[in-house]
Image 1 (spheres, rainbow, N blue to C red):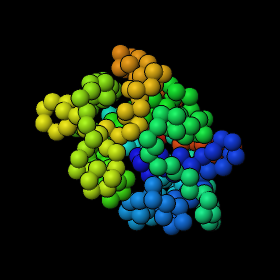
Image 2 (image 1 turned 90 degrees about the vertical axis):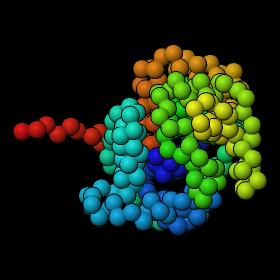
Image 3 (image 1 turned 45 degrees about the vertical axis):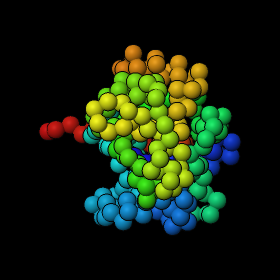
Length: 245
């Protein structure tokens, strides 16, 4: 999921550059960006050999779609047609470091072309599963196992009583937060999670989705599809269902 996110998050609507078309995460030039740490492991998987007809650009994004649906998230319609470029300029990697300010986070999503509601849907979607790995993002731990869509996450963000995670802060000087959500393991929070609660507009959408879960699933699917198709205008063909004979 993170691989697909970063492959798409290079898009800049002002210059119309970046995005998932090109599959440039295949190249060390882009994977060497500190924000892309850990992706060499994913790149080393021999997935392309299993699906030779697909471009790596399509495979990276399709894997993200499958991960969302497989873990209980919404089914996101997939479109094929991304091409694999022959190279990658050093400036092509534009994935930005987790920012300590609300304004900077809003600026990042504005660069991608997302409004506040889409931003909340996308962040909540992405933080429903998995965990952070210290050797990749620099952050450590899972948000929490068995989160719902998105109720438990929302309640965790809103609960308060958080603190800087002392172990992560000492080991990597990363501003990662945690709180006691009950039931054992603390609830892990990144700066982006904190922004969703402390910004009035973000919080309004967060609370709305908490009480309108079917609407969240719909909007999250739309936001993910939009993200992963940035920079692909004119190249994609919608997936067609195969009917059993």
